[in-house]
Length: 323
Image (cartoon, rainbow, N blue to C red; front, side, top):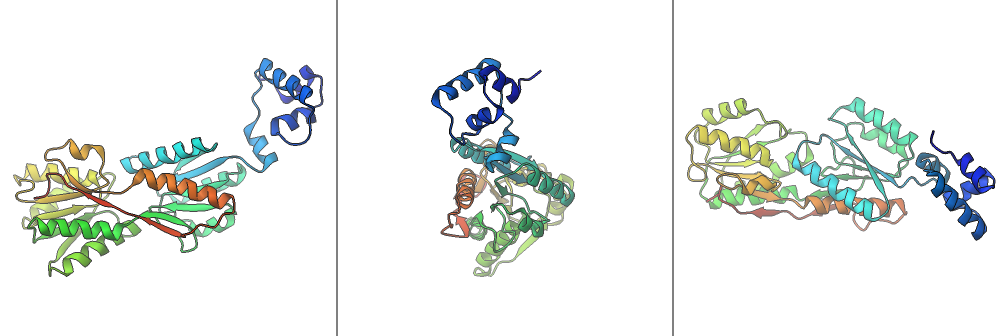
């Protein structure tokens, strides 16, 4: 049986309340008594109940991180960067995979209330955004803007679209296509806006096709490419999607980049491994995560953020899938 606070008090020959003050570092305890209690805790192998302590201190040092799924490279690197920053600052993170399910979101909201979560980082297109006001804890969003009043950190998706369009046009493509994610996502809308803005100045049109960025339908992509042989330049809204497109183009006998140029998004490690290596747009995923955590802890401390909606720069990484 695990030792309890009562066992510690008995071994140290003090009251339970005295042990509690030592554990929670609140209230006066004579130094000699503190040493005796610390030794009793060590000898018994007593581990304080962190939840109980957080309820007493009103400080759990726990941050919740909400993601829509954990498959893509983006979320893995994002979580790792948040966790690394949290560890350095004495916080722990709990991450929640909502799978774009509003019912799961509501379940987790109840969990946050019960376990005294100090702050929330949301990296999903949270469908119960109206419920967040009831949380009474600081919230920051990553890669999304859920509400004008909720602080956010995003990459410059408009610029990403502009960079991709400009590079495809520079490489000589005239029949462009956008293979993107769900049209309701803010990032999808902004990348499309930037792409359209750039091609309009060149009097070029682009066909737009929506796909699942996590599990692209290869058969559907093949149907689109077979039905549109004139396409000679593609901007894919994820490197995973670009990889599938590249594979199918090879199957159809289309050369990359001679016949079709491709640009992906995220600069995942496999971009430099495939043949030909993939030109892509890099967003600062690790920096997004670190800055999200730092801004959230500022909000927890009651410090006003200099910018409510922070936008970070993106970069075109040139490889061999463009001319």
